[in-house]
Image 1 (tube, rainbow, N blue to C red):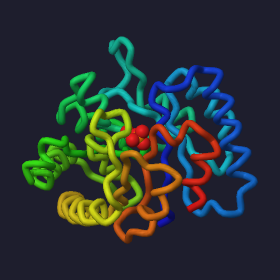
Image 2: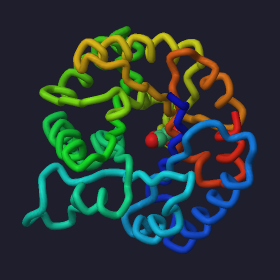
Image 3: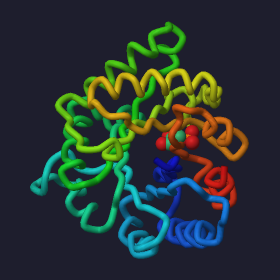
Length: 249
Ligand code: 13P
């Protein structure tokens, strides 16, 4: 399987800037001879409909930053997986640490979102990651294992391509006060561990990607690792030159 580079634009861009950046990304991807990875853009909900038109039948794939845990119904403020899928969205980020922290998403919500996304043929990108406290106490693997078990409880997939695990150590995310990128070697060890855990739960050799302060200077090192199947990029993905440089490695 190809490596995959996923841009998580979070809520960093206004509507106009999202559309402008999407057009730049598409033009650059079409022009580039160097990009071998699959490129995915996850914009906010407001710009997802025009971006579906911009990326329609193009090499750039569309992802959502979240989707509802249940089917259609009386759920104020939610957006259904069915509608995202019908729009042409292929991927959905589930359980991002920012949603776990600020919106109090717990593992049963995350588990439900994964199952609902799969029902509508969206590929969930399931985020797990330890806090600095767990890292310092040497409990990171135990913590990650628990997060993964809870998120994937009762989940069934047909093929390895149906679900992606994103390892994002919370202390490495650029917006955290202690942010620093994890070393590629250190990430590789944990990715290998997560691959093994996920294989035990879902009986498939899933893709496991890395996220946390990835930029054009360190992306190459991460992508060279055997167990790093791609990158989930935040801050560095909202600048086209920087993002294209990451995608070209
Ligand atoms: P940064 O690349 O800004 O550290 O963000 C990582 C992230 O949270 C992507 O989902």
